Amino acid sequence: MPPKSDSVEGIVLGFVNEQNRPLNSQNVADALQKFNLKKTAVQKALDALADSGQISFKEYGKQKIYIARQDQFDIPNGEELEEMKKANAKLQEELVDQKKAISEVESEVRGLQSNLTLAEIKSKETKLQSEVQEMEEKLNKLRSGVILVKPEDKKIIEDSFAEKVNQWKKRKRMFKELWDNITENSPKDQKEFKEELGLEYDEDVDVNLQSYTDMLASLNKKRKISR
Image 1 (tube, rainbow, N blue to C red):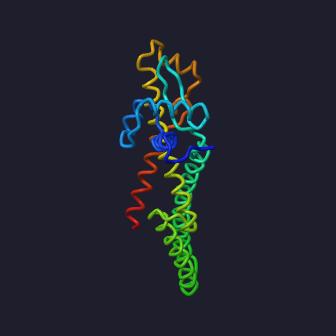
Image 2: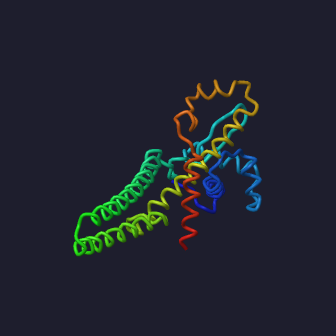
Image 3: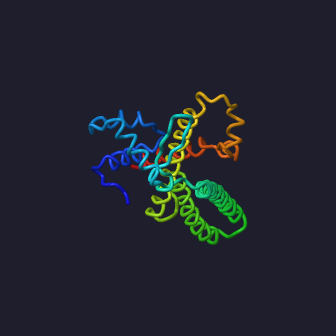
């Protein structure tokens, strides 16, 4: 059963979950001075929360590092990010196809002008110009960043993508802080220690956060322009 929000454990649990980064008892005690909580009370609350499984912790020598349970947060799914990347590539292909279709229609117009009667040419030209105009309108929409789907569906996809990339960046930063705390005074070789723990970096699985960050920046830029 979760502690009451105004109890010592409740205050400590709320802070740990809000920060969602590696913390020791001194970090928590310093931050919660406004509640007049002493370090001994904070330490006791942290241990109680860890024993009850409401937060996670690791021991490194005499020091304990505490962190919020990660199963309560939405973690970016690599497969979902990959699907978004594929969707973007598909849109680029559609843009190329639209340009090709317009070029083919214009070529057909030129060919018909040399083979048909004047009346036939005018009739065919009117029809083809209408088709070209329709395709150009679609092409302009694609160039302006408008995806030919429902606006509400587009917003859901973009918001989901932004959230997952931001969560990825946040978790990458959290891991670096935790890893630096762990290895700061460790005599072990970091590469060997990483392999011993079975850890893999993004680069180990051919994933590059920067490419998704750039994609998100481009998306945000387009949103600002469209407002």
